[in-house]
Length: 139
Picture (cartoon, one colour):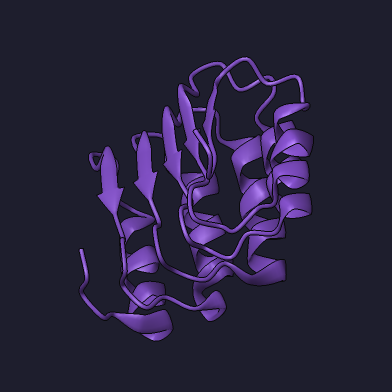
């Protein structure tokens, strides 16, 4: 937590982890990862079957990153917990992410704290018929 690896460092880590089949939990909090690493992050999400928990708090996904990560989550259904706190994920991006996880068999919790959603935006996210735990700003 708090290691300032940046986008280029994250890309190297994500690429190295593509061949890892043992890692179950990765915490990348406050690592100053920007959206340049999003495509590599999505490839890791899509290709790993051992990874169950990801915490990406305080890093930037960006528009393209939110889209490719959401698509990757649809393809890999092994995750139980995803933490995208303070990632500047917009309400629309959060809704798409939640919708992509509707039929996800293992998902237990999606954490979206600190993304600055208004009450109306939070309501919009909660209105997606998602039976899993979604933690937002006011919960």
